[in-house]
Amino acid sequence: MQAKTFTMADLVRYTLVIAMLIFFLFPIYWMITTSFKPPPDILTRPPKWVFEPTLVNYVYAFEEADFAMFMKNSATVSLISTTLVIVAGCLASYSFARYNPGAGHLTFFILTTRMMPAIAVIIPFFVIFKEVGETAIGQALSLGLDRLGALVVCYTVFNLPLAIWLLISFFQDIPVELEDSARLDGYSRLQVLRRVVLPLAAPGIAVTAIFTLLFSWNEFLFAFLLTRDVARTITVGVAGFWTQRGILWGPLSAAATVCVVPMLIFALLLQRYIVRGLTFGAVRG
Amino acid sequence: MDEAIEKAPAAGRAPKRAMSDTWYSILLIAPAVIVILFFALFPLLYAIDLSFRHVDLTSAVGIGPYVGLDNYRFALNDRIFWESTRRTLIFAVGAVSVEMVLGVAIAFLLNQLRWFQGILRSLLILPLASAPAAVGLVWRYMYHPDFGVYNGILATLGLPELKWLADVRLAMPSVIVFDVWQWTPFVALIVLAGLQSLPKEPFEAAELDGASTWQVLRRLTFPMLAPVLTLVFVLRSIDAIRLYDAILSLSHGGPGTATETLTYYLYRIGLKYFRLDHASAISLMFLYVTVVFTGVALRSMMRVQAERARRA
Image (tube, rainbow over all chains, first blue to last red; front, side):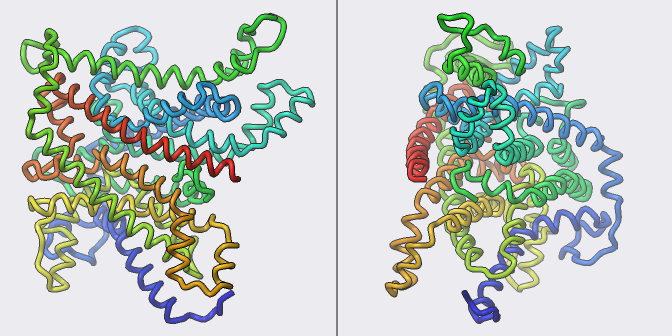
């Protein structure tokens, strides 16, 4: 269509692109470089751009706080709640997409719960988990305060509405005729769901799983207020370097890097799924 | 799970026949709906109950007797409540408008690029994928009046240094800049996807008719993009009024109360002063307003989506 030469207009465009990239990537660059700075170089005026890289901040962060445990907690909670969200979400959204129980009112209600500010429900959640945690069942399911099960429940509840909404749009894209012909071939309804519908919806399920995992890993408020020691997650661990004596910027940057970078890699690898997920499936990305 | 459904008693008149579609559909939604209903309704009822009582967990009162509408009266007469509401709106309007303008501009820019479009789109995801609670703290370091890199850059350029989050007037704009950093890519990526899904034919026809760029934008691109723009605007507005992590990690609502939004004020009275009665009353009013607002917005969004589905 256009000539393959670099025009004046291209020069302007790519200059703007570079400015944009600097604005959006610089904070991440600064976080990672600060994490490798020797402590004396962190509090200098003006800030140092060139320095001897060191691992002392990482050593300090992992010795001072149990970051291995925080990461394990975050991973456990994120993976379990994502699995629960996908199982319950797929069943529900398939039903909504095909049979529309509740004639739209129920799906609308579900979406409004996604809009609840978490802070407004945190106190009742706190009370529930405090009470349930003291019962035998609660202890068996690790549902009390400072227990991972409580966080799993919170993340499942808060991610389900969005997951259902995302998945509905993907299930609606699957032609009903395919299911009808599978039924005529003698498949039961559940076999149709398992062998025909779910494989076809796999990209949508991937999108939903990515988002649920990302939100659960990055979540802060529930983890901050419902855990104290053994169930601390990584985002709360990072905030732990804002201490009474001041903020320990070096270890904090190291911790933030450990928290953020895995999700950045994850997002880059799966970016083609993310764009469609961002739009509630409303725009074909 | 599957077995449980298969063995479930078949409903309807004839016991031997398979379950009716209605029962099957209800069975499928049951796990999700029960979980959501329980965890949406219980907190709601609990908060409603508390909002009519006198509750002060720091004194001997604990969860005390019913006091009628006192807590609502308190909230409506509470100057800080109104101020934090005003700040929430200032934040939301400021952040969302900048994000919309910048995001749309970036989407148009990326759409015109001939090289590197894919990789740039991937890189834009990075701010979105970073945990705001963690990266917000890094921004606090970057905003530091003495050791922060932003003042370092200003000094190198020979510009006056700023106090950023420590300045009462600049604190809110600084929080907005952080939000713009994190969420503009969201707007840009959705609008870009919208631009790329527009049909080609009307544009080719317009080119044949010799329409100017401006005419094409005004008559074709923006009207066709309107549903996508509405969607992004609604989603961003909903999240902006619920902003919480960023305030906690950037400013703790300070200096003074310069960046104390409604959610942070709720956190302070509910979880620092343990006045659960006031917190519940304010939460409920906040919830009511957001649900009504988002309800109206989402209804129109759903209509747009249903229309698109019909046309497709």
